[in-house]
Image (cartoon, rainbow, N blue to C red):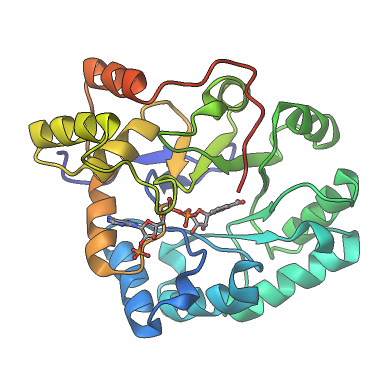
Length: 285
Ligand code: NAP
């Protein structure tokens, strides 16, 4: 393994962001002190991309993140999301300001539309531009956008404004590789892989795919989860945001950002977790 976490340019922003970040969905359900410690341990290990949302615990996850990043705000690439039902021009601004209060900060590094809802994209993107103009957000993007949504968004947003698309991507859900990922890569839009372990359905050692991960992991003195994260990161422009509520899990996940697989290992994993035959509509949780 290499000694330090790989950084990649995050879309059209000037920021270089660690390839492995930290998710926070349901984190507020864990022991609070342990969860805060885990996030801070992640920062120590270079996992400075923290992903949260007003939806998570109805703001409780943002409050927890606010506690974890207190005194360390400048280290963090902080991302939150507006719910689609709040994505009107005025409500987007109110939702962002409420997120900032809970996070105890004056700015987000990136603000996302969590998924598409009834509000026209023009309205939401207009509010994002206003928030960016006032310095409350430094960039903005989308989440759960399939290619048709992305095409529509690109027609509305001026060039380079939409910096990322956060989508479901794990070994057993590789649909984005067919169309969403190439679409984003060709335009320099970052792809942030959520649920990179498939939540609690990570392939176990008794499954055929799990055995492949175990063998590759053993060859690198790594773990199957580190191999899985490294696989998801093998294509350019991709970032992963595993959620972990213990320092031990965080430490293991950080290792995934330092592991580099060979071409032959990538091919073995692709064969073990095949992309289903097309078409590949974007799945979401
Ligand atoms: P995930 O990261 O795939 O999986 C989280 C689960 O994996 C938790 O149960 C966690 O347990 C466990 N885990 C983490 N590291 C582990 C390790 N090293 N060993 C064993 N178990 C480990 O699922 P996710 O939380 O759904 O996705 C990650 C993040 O993506 C979310 O937290 C959220 O920030 C974001 N997300 C975004 C969307 C969207 O619509 N934009 C949707 C879903 C998720 P512990 O908690 O016990 O460590």
